[in-house]
Length: 325
Image 1 (cartoon, rainbow, N blue to C red):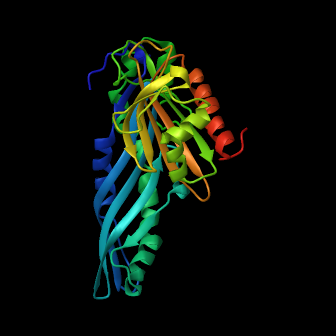
Image 2 (cartoon, rainbow, N blue to C red):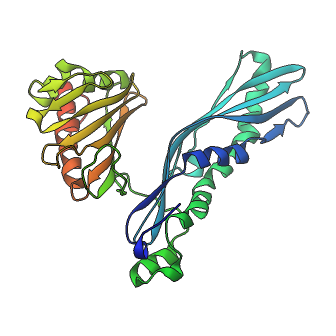
Image 3 (cartoon, helix red, strand yellow):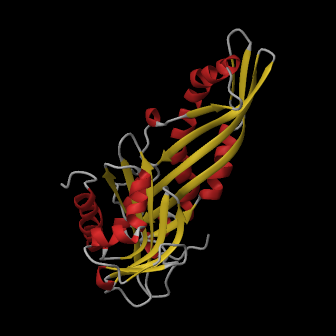
């Protein structure tokens, strides 16, 4: 990775998704267990999928990791003379997940009563081993890639960043609304940009909330006026709040996520941030995880306040989807 960042002052980020796939294939595939009576055995055979984001970032000499992925593993084994296959799904492996907070969803292909000992063996012996391996990921991520995004300390002439750099080397738990500078892939306008994240909980289902963001009638209700433009399909454009917010829908996954180009009217012409809203269905409520990439530096508070006031608060008040704080 070619690096030009005098004194390690500026934000630099590195996408590590592909490396992470190799890492977890090497660390998790092959984990196995056998019951005490030798009648049941299970072995993880494949990393079936890894989806999400994995980034290592640095600014002013400090290195942090920001990652949030879903992992699905294939396994096979046997219970006495019966062959068993299935998957182990780990919905969230994130930078702020503690070892005892990982969730493991174990499924058996063609599940029967006779195959249940395999699931019990996985929970008893495989899951504890997986917890240890997953917990080590953040440290290994920074140790492997941290050196790629900053110059060696001996080349650093800034006392401030060099002292920060000396303290780096372990993951720093970023706040929910932590910001990181990124390249503005969706725009040619010249801006120093940052990544912004917030979460909001709504007392409704993911399906209802997804519809609330895309149905023209509902949008008119919570924005308090008909949209200037609104075509809720991939490639469709929109303009809300009298044209003060505009953009284009890029990817729609039913009841799961909305990805769009998004801009405020007073940003430089043709500059858009990449906005993703992911809907996480829980028990009786849905968490909306909102992430912008490409927000102009200095516009973080304005962007956050506007979204919390005119999107989150307005939707809750209009449809009764939760208390307004």
